[in-house]
Amino acid sequence: MITTKELRKKYLDFFKSKGHAIIPSASLIPENDPTVLFTTAGMHPLVPYLLGEKHPLGKRLVDIQKCIRTGDIDDVGDSWHLSFFEMMGNWSLGDYFKKEAITMSFEFLTKELKISKERISVTCFVGDNDCPKDNEAANLWETLGIAKNRIHFLSKADNWWGPAGQTGPCGPDTEMFFHVKDVQEKNTEEFLQFCKQGAFCEIWNDVLMQYNKNALGKYEEGKQQNIDTGMGVERTIAVMNGFTNAYECDSIKPILEKVVETAGKNIKTLNGQEIKSARIITDHLRASVMILGDDKGIVPSNVDQGYVLRRFIRRSIRHARLLGINTVFSKAIAEVVVNVMGKVYSEVEKNKEKIYLELQKEEEKFSSTLENGIKVLEKKLQFLGASKAELYGSREAAASLGQSPVKQLNSKGAFDLYQSFGFPIEMTQEMCKEKGFTVDIKGFEELLKEHQELSRKGAEQKFKGGLADASIETTKLHTAAHLLNEALRQIVNPNISQKGANITAERLRFDFNADEKLTDEQVNKVEDWVNNAISKECEVQMEVLPLDAAKKSGAHGVFDSKYGEQVKVYTIKSGNTIFSKEICGGPHVENTKVMGKFKIVKQEAVAAGIRRIKATLSN
Image 1 (spheres, rainbow, N blue to C red):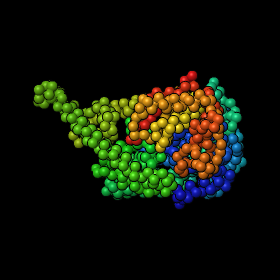
Image 2 (spheres, rainbow, N blue to C red):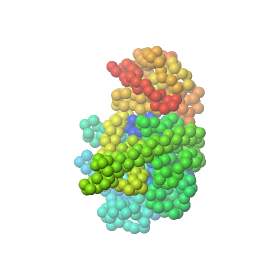
Image 3 (cartoon, rainbow, N blue to C red):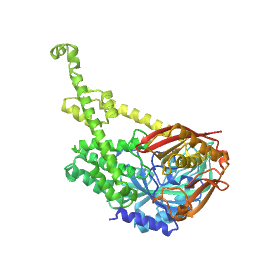
Image 4 (cartoon, rainbow, N blue to C red):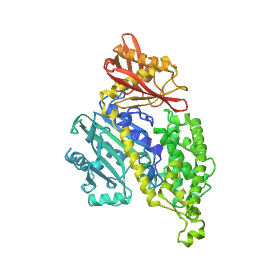
């Protein structure tokens, strides 16, 4: 048996021995990539460096990144899907490439984790009109001892990464699959079949950033070739230990056990629906605790990350009711999550009181909504049962004309309950069944699919583009965010600090701590301060300093575990006058004279004690 603690240590120690600097996990809320709401992979915090920025700790990096993914939220409850997970990753920023990356991956799997090479299959890019077949990667695997019948070529859909935006670094990847069952494939067709059956499980992916996609959509050899890898902690633990699901992992199992205990049930006797509900509560509250525990200050709301957080919490409450938990329960579960995850991520332990408070507030709020939804459903059923009888004067009169009461809740009625009150369809079905009604499930599923498709397209439109494109517009606005941060400290409150940022080519969005809305006078003064700095044609200078030296130099930053021993400090200055000095990963303009005019276009509250400014730059 291998524990998550042992796996984390093995991974970090191994790559440290190969010259990689260990970097801490970044925030769950992306700083340099507006294309996503959450950090979904280890590469997101490193986008500027993959694009050519110099990392203060060098060209070889390794970390274990906390991640949130919501694309498969409706699949959570099965054996493997998780919303929050930990991703092990190692990077080469223009240093080593395919041979070294593949060799190190093979060595870690076979020597550190002691997996027989006979239980490893790999996939490589098959090639298309854009880029050739990746025979180089395949040949490397064969040289290391992976038999030809276990090396498979697949299309871009399976073995290609990027770019993160419309343009930028991208390339083929090579994926490693662990044989959960001791079987061997003869060819690619059998390999794919074994994967579908769960006999093979992907545990590692090496992205080989060999190309750059330009504005014309053409793929060309990249000036900087990078390695970006990803290996899920929970999945690796599960398959290595022979578990049949991710919830057996030692970082998740205690949480699940607490959920089942709270429901007054025995985990061994749970039926299928009860297991699913218990897993959903476990996963969603684990994810909620990690989001609430993040230093970025996200709380439940109706927009962006706050909306996703609210959905996690409310879905947990709904499934708690299905599991028979009818009392306030979220804090008891959260305490277990804090106990397990707080040992690894200190910010979770530090922010635990805030976590408990926000969960309790949201649970109390939704419990009331849930009760109102139940009343609405009961009225719908009462109306349906009586509608035709009332139309004909009496049930007897209706029956004599062959008209019986409606006994099915239509799809719109079920979907309204789902959308307005957060009712799971299972709860609607259960209540309807108790009163002798059925539900138009097929129609509901069609409406739900249509709603999800619209939501997906909206999200794609909302978050496309961004720093991943490394445009001059986003670079200008990123520099403007530094000046805005300092202007707010100078004019409004010296204790103001950044709580989040989202930058596209059109505007910057900046979240900061403040209890009150800025007055018109303050807005004008902030704009004038920033525009004055821009007009001074300030130089933007970067230096790499030890963290302590950066603190002593007066550089601003949230000095927590996210920083490494060496940091990049950007100073915006004109002569001897310093307008801003901050720890940051970039990118920035070289001189403010290219930035244009700064304008605040909107301000709003996003959470208790957190306000948001949206601003633009114009020529």
